[in-house]
Amino acid sequence: MAENTEQQPGKTIHAGGEWLEAVSGATREIIDPADALPFAVVAEGDEKDTDIAVAAARAAFDGGQGAWPRTPVTERAALLRRVADLLVRDREELGLLESRDAGKTVEEGRVDIDCVADAFRYFADLVAGEAPGRVVDAGTPDVHSVVVHEPVGVCALITPWNYPLLQASWKIAPALAAGNTFVVKPSEITPLTTVALIDLLVEAGLPAGVANIVTGPGHSVGARLAEHPDVDLVSFTGGLISGTKVAQAAAVTVKKVALELGGKNPNVVFADACATEEGFDTAVDQALNAAFIHSGQVCSAGARLIVEETVRERFVAELARRAEKIRLGRGTEDGVECGPLVSEQQRVKTESYVAAALAEGAVLRSGGKRPEPTATR
Image (cartoon, rainbow, N blue to C red; front, side, top):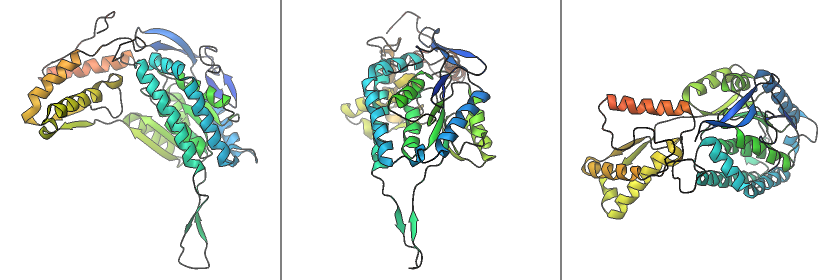
């Protein structure tokens, strides 16, 4: 990869084509969730750093003939394809970094990078194949009506901690394809691969100021992005409470807002799905995947399992048996099937859910406590 956080610790704010420290000089240690030890240092930006990044994005959008929104669509698409190629080139390194930063298994990290490359190619193809305009029948020969797509402007992109690079790519790739400039704020817990992606965008030839990143907390960086008068659109993925605050702050300047918030998804199993052994095994496998992939830290995880009464006991017993066989451990180790939770805060929250369920009369069938610190099952 190009220069990354390990090569320039504390210089992870990118604005106007330069890697910068926080104006305040503040830094944050990034913690490995497997052992709770710091392994990287990033800048801890605030409102001042955010203003600098937004100004750079605004200048790159509003500039003259060479500004990014006036770059031909074919050139924008070609740049996205170059980024996809660079992601493939750095797949192993990025997958390992995603694993160490977020706790997921390295195989999950590799799959994430594949999906990120696919996203850049998808939006490159989408914008390259778009018609220049759609003619609309205005009902009179005296009126010529055409619908055309134009870039929004400066986009504030706020991403969550569970799929850091994948969530960032779903925002960054379409923003760039459409001719927008952006400031991205990754989660302060898992920022490293998003920082690395900015490096790849620079390596691919993206003009200075088009892509900007501010590493820092939501209450300062995220809040300032949501309210900033020079930001035209806010895209936020995260929790309901934070999303509500983003929408309220953005409403003052009537920004366009896209919110993807959390939910509790039911996985429903009917008896007819388990009528054959193959069907039963498949249903159990999918319930297991829904609950335990990336340690259950997925927006669309099967957080609730609803099983028809006639197959309930057999299904629950088999699910618990297989859950006991999941190999836990550091995500970067061979053979590990489920890595650690992303942070101490998340572990405490999960433990509170277990305690609350038991207090309400739930029966513990598997797990329920922390594994031994050195054990890999």
